[in-house]
Image 1: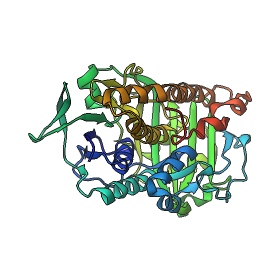
Image 2 (image 1 turned 180 degrees about the horizontal axis):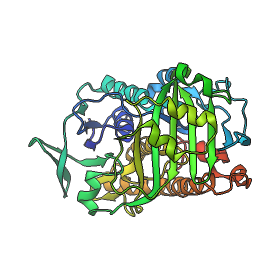
Image 3 (image 1 turned 120 degrees about the horizontal axis):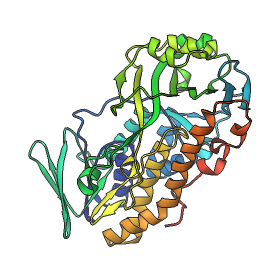
Image 4 (image 1 turned 90 degrees about the vertical axis):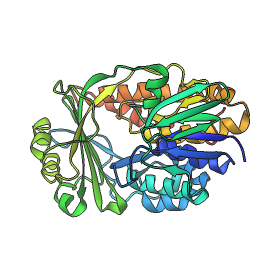
Amino acid sequence: MRTKITIIGAGIAGLTAALALLRGGWRVRVYEQAPVLGEVGAGITLSSGAGNGLAALGLGENLLAASLPVPDIAFVHFRTGELLAGSFDNTAPRDFGFAKARHIHRADLHAILLAGVRALDAEAVVTGARLVSIENGGEEVTAHFADGATATADALIAADGARSTVRRHVFGDDHPEFAGQIAFRCLIPRAEAAPFMGAGNAVVSIGAGRIFNRYVIRGGDLVNVIGIARSDRWRQEGWSTPATPDEFAAEFAGFHPDVLGLIRRAPAKTLIKWGLFARPRVKDWSCGRVLHIGDAAHPMLPFLGLGAATAIEDGIMLARALALTPDITAAFEKFQRARAERVETVRTESIRQGEIIQAANPDSGELRHSPSQQAEIFSYDPLTAPI
């Protein structure tokens, strides 16, 4: 067996890295602070490259069964529903497998990744392990947890999200700034949403500092809804503050009746809100034998929907870098060099996409030239990208 690696965080980045490393013969332990790994989150986009990468890790059949191909999305005027870009012909897209992006419930992707990891090592994931500090020096790294347990390994991978505990211990507080955006999210059963789905399965309503996105997941049985609006009424960072349909509707006053109808159908148990916070770029993703991946390394705003995809890419390319370079610190440096341009492109284009789709004038025509229309952003392949 090869060198042992500790991973902090059993999210998409952490589990992808664990699966890729286990398949490469590494000894891996993943530590997750949540006591139970359950069904959380909503719909996400799985890019073609990320899908191909996970298929190469043995998950292809299960992922295809659990996801739907992303149709030709209709971008419409927020008030009139008039088509601005894309197409309304998106009800039954052809299924090209992983040749195109797919929509999937985050919980389904997470469950498939977790099952893949546990199939290789039933003890690989440890829950209820809240990290409190790390010792990073010499030839090993030790993680200390709230219950007094410790884990010593030859390397530690921080996959613990945008508010990374590891990053704070290694680099200090990063002082996130409110991005002036508030987001709402919910899942609506298709039967409840049906009267407001006449424009097809995937529609983005844009304008006046606001965007409302909805598409179907889980075989079309659920409608994933997310609305993002410019706002100065937020001060604390958080991911899951309960919200009400009235609050949601107030932020999207003046939108098309289909949008407001969906908002009124939002189930209280799944409707949440949160503020978007921007963090400065992490110049060095590694320090000694500690490496940051996913949101812990490159947090980004959600306007391109590629956060999960870049986390998956990180996990796959990290395993490739370690396979090519036995020296861990050298492999970490090689990994960052290979990934830096890609994630910076996604980060900056996500910001630009948000600016375009929330423009004061949705009739400007600029949307037709937005990052979301650039196929190469979504086709990046972590299996073949140079390292």
